[in-house]
Image (cartoon, rainbow, N blue to C red; front, side, top):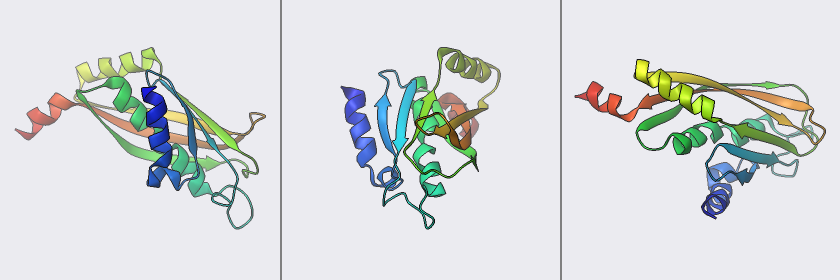
Length: 154
């Protein structure tokens, strides 16, 4: 129920709502999120396909929020870099699936025992109903232990 309310709130948040994307699923542990991006009057560009800004905007905050929720308190998580490669025009509803598994969370925690910070790179594709990739996004996420902020500022 909690993730359902969060999903509704996320979809109503003006900055996200403006992308045209809609979160359709958030797992109870924040390890999987699915979204859809329809072609409609809000997302259509001059040539009648999904606007590239809507494609990127719909996927932009997802990995950062997933890591904040999955890692819990004690970590600072920020987007650091991103790139998008448009592979074909979006002429129908597109979908994306974001997954962070236990091994990735363990790898982040292990990296942060060796260093105060780590950067992680994630990939997600926007695909149509047949699975054809229309855009590929690469996100670099910066993670830091909360206690390393306090020791470096003191």
